[in-house]
Length: 148
Image (cartoon, rainbow, N blue to C red; front, side, top):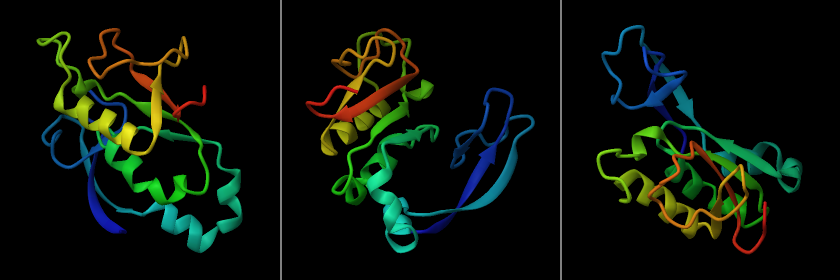
């Protein structure tokens, strides 16, 4: 569904923004209101002829990547693009090496739900679990059984 969201843009440790209030109070931060739109609905209503041409989608939403993937399921019924998805830094708990954080687990659950598999962008080899032992900042997603 389309809705108004608060976006906190900037801050000392960020190159962009993030949804919600997790960064509220950072020096240099600016609060903006933006409209989020449902991409499958928007494309279906406004640009249906473009849907078959979609081959690549980049998602970098400061930790909301898994939730965004799930909203794309109606689109994935029509096309199967390759994704490059941020493996958000806050998903990685350096104090617990070898363990999946809640954020990584949610991202990997979303990846499985949409029928995709995560791949290391450098080697294109499968990422076996959500621990991110190699500290990969982004991951490729390809439909399960299809190499990127």
